Image (cartoon, one colour):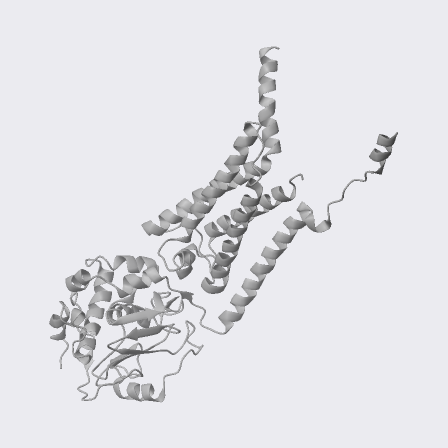
Length: 285
Length: 167
């Protein structure tokens, strides 16, 4: 009798709501959905305030900025003509760090800028280090559509030998402004981005190496970059026989030679090593 | 007992095992799939080949798997390599439980909490990767999403197993 009373008195234990398996499962799904929705909202807010480009892989940037000396030497001028025009200016353009400055003015939509940036990164990679480069492609509505490249917008460059100033005037949409040249940069462009230094006034990309050498346009055919990813292009820079490599690296060698002239051939490990001394002879003084 | 009766008797424990341990089995299957996909992503990363993946304005596996967030912090090791390790461990934990069940032995007391802890770690890392895809890279990778869903599934199963453990 006492046992029966004990059995009747024991009520079934109820699991608290928050400990039920279904609640925990549902809670997990809700948390994940809320997180994903939050990410989408953040991404949307970010893209309305910026050009919306993807951060470049450090490994890819290393491949581009660190093309091997053997490839640089093997390519040389690659059979390409010197794209740079000497200004015969007696003064050296100095940057914010007091060093000879390389000025780049372009735009994200521009396919020739897209091509030129590869050579600029290869050349400047020998003198310093880029950070925070982002991938982008040129406009889908222009010639050489969607040319894969990087943008200098938002990036930084540090070097002991040169200063680098970049201006991306618009995003991939040529109607959406991004950066404005300073009044000094505008003055330089008025003077050097015009005949007799360049063929067409106001052309981009415009490169000024310390006011000693200027160039506009791309030093090689942007079509060589078509239908490839940045990673694929970077991977091909190890092959000096590849036409794409020859275009990028030859152009970069000319830029490097010009930069070396401005730095007093420093650093020696870059400026005294082939093919730079040979390329410098082709620059024209 | 006839041969037919003997065979039926022997197969019953295996069917019971599958039904009783479906949580562990599903963890093992998820780990196997996740392991295979992680291997594929890692091989593609090192070989430079293109992923079998659709490309739209939102879905772009190449953009995701070649971005700065496709490698472990400060290294050149692809995150898919971490996925290989994660799914390997998850599969091994499930296998431990299944082996014990098959031998009619008690499951180790530490197994379910460790599975939950492992699943939680994986889920947190997955949320970071999803953040990187959506907010930083602005693209989604189908293969990565499959791996993320398998991780989430593994966490939920581990959570369910721990919550349903009889006290």
